Length: 238
Image 1 (cartoon, rainbow, N blue to C red):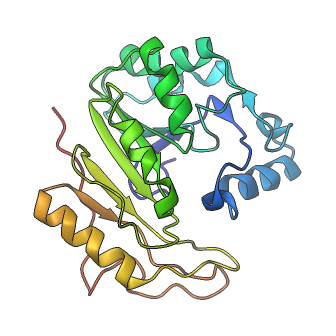
Image 2 (tube, helix red, strand yellow):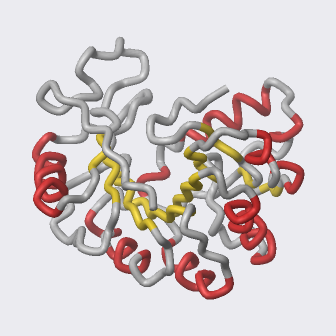
Image 3 (cartoon, rainbow, N blue to C red):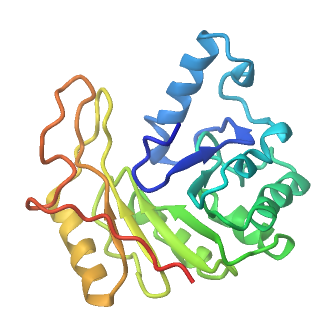
């Protein structure tokens, strides 16, 4: 079926559900989708957005024979405290079991990521990222750097302010994006351009998703561009 998330080919969700953790969660797309799918009667979302484990979906990547970039747990957070360590391990082991794919994981809970890291397998085809939506959370990138992830990335989405404290050294990929929803918070150009320029200077792949856009407003032709140019760069696979 494919994914609507621009930086992956597919999603797999052996974990769904989460709880708010920081300001980037205020307009969580996953919570909205979970409520909608619950209303449609999908068994997987019987608990709406409460943390729920789906062990039957751990092997979903095995159904895709051709190599894909798979965002694991796009509808939750694998490092939520309600996810048992043994299940975290099983999710990570998926990357070993089906090595034809690249697995992308993302969390806001960098402290719990670092705590769990010694107990997890870290295959080279697993990319680990943290969300940094505002300068108060730039420390998450520093915690990420202490993990054994082969590819470490930051998702600056929704970007809610400038990030003067974010140190890009030691990172392998940077994603930037604004909100596209009712009441979307504005993302300023002056916040984005310094990050893009720093990535270019340091040779770090830069992926720009979109400017902030109210959901009910028609999408602009250039909402995914910076000065008319698309920035869809990816780390080089080993």
